[in-house]
Image 1 (cartoon, rainbow, N blue to C red):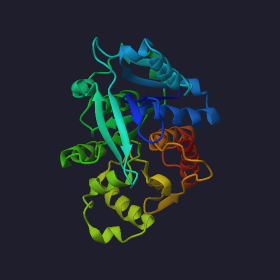
Image 2: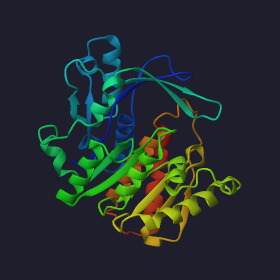
Image 3: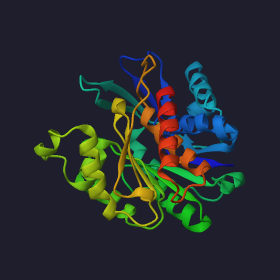
Image 4: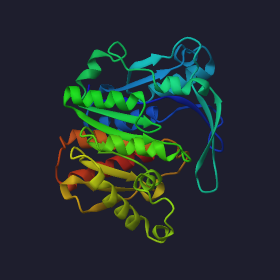
Length: 317
């Protein structure tokens, strides 16, 4: 096993893109991105998913659930770590509608009455397949900040095994400051190697979400300023921070050249069908690409090459 993706699965009904339900929540898209890199450098079936799924989908009781499981299998990752939710719990389901600025608006349809309980479900030893424990990388989608089980599991994983840990924060817009404070707390711990927030999350982390002067800057200037403010707040274990900015691409800071921020353009030679999950695929793909270079504090060129490969994976998601 080369890598494990740890996160949550929900069912998305995306208005304006598809008429069918899709497997979402970030974790399946991250698995796709990691497997895309895996096909180029390692075997994709050595990339595993660690998550929870309702029995109504996992047991394929309907044509829709069969379709959803087929979508999950199409990533070509290992699904042995996908466990069934407790009896009578259903897979959370969202309706997603994008506004004119391409900002997603979420409507909860089902399953969110137990969402907090689901986020607290522990990844105990009997939940984690033994072969997953050999993975060099754990990529965690930290839902709602750093206070839930995925983040605690990630910290335990790295501390106990000396492996690499990658974190992608999953935070809905409008979340209170306390959620971002929890992210800053875990960034100060000396156990994270790679971190992949989006631009909005980065602005909230450094406290500049409402500064109008920053809005006059170009995207690269803005990302550079924000990253240089964040980096002194992170632990020495941090090797790479990649800030996702949608169609503009990403901005990458590496400890190998700590005062520089590099812009990596997005891939545009494609017909856009659905942008949902592209950032999740990018973040996991980047973490695996960096891991495959045996990165700790490698040359910046290695980091840029990894980010370019991740951009391609995100575009294909």
